Image (cartoon, rainbow, N blue to C red):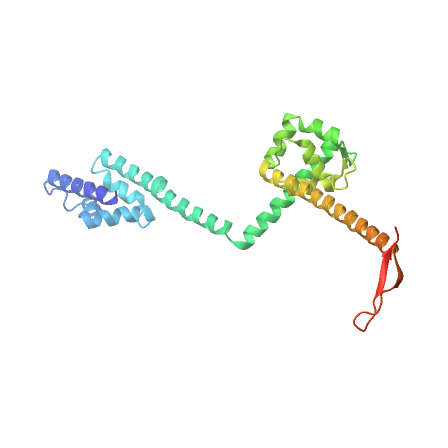
Length: 259
């Protein structure tokens, strides 16, 4: 765009000089116009100086006033376009790049993550105090009642804690299965089950798998105990009653079970 404006101003100077027919060739205005707009390279350099502050705008406006108000207004439009359009866009690009670089910095990422986790823990602690009414404990009935509240449901959804089965969520938080959860159980559960319904479903499957594993282990222990009892009973009913005769130069004890 600078080249186009330079061509226009150079042409305007030539037209002004022809209109004067050389009568103004020795005046100070002519010297200014010739210095700033006398040729295409001079016009381009003058526009560049006007943008970066290499020349006073007052000198340029004084010279352009001789060319007519149209060229003076066009110059103001050019300066406004450069400052508010081009320069601001370039500045915004540099600032955006600097912000991206700062966000990708490892120290900044760690700091932001730690800060976000602290804020989340504080929000969860405040939420539990509100749900429990300051008592420090929350039972399943209170939890289900609060979960049906649209505001609480939306708040939990904003924390990425969503479930269609609040009873199962409470059971997962209730580690000791006493029907009550404290602030630590609530906060730890919310932190563990964040990530939407899929994360909670995985947690439910893991809990069910642990329960089945415990039941299977108990069943194996009972089977082992029963096997030990049966072995002991069989050994107690086996008694020696005599020896077989000499066979092949040896003897063997014979065990007969009581009937």
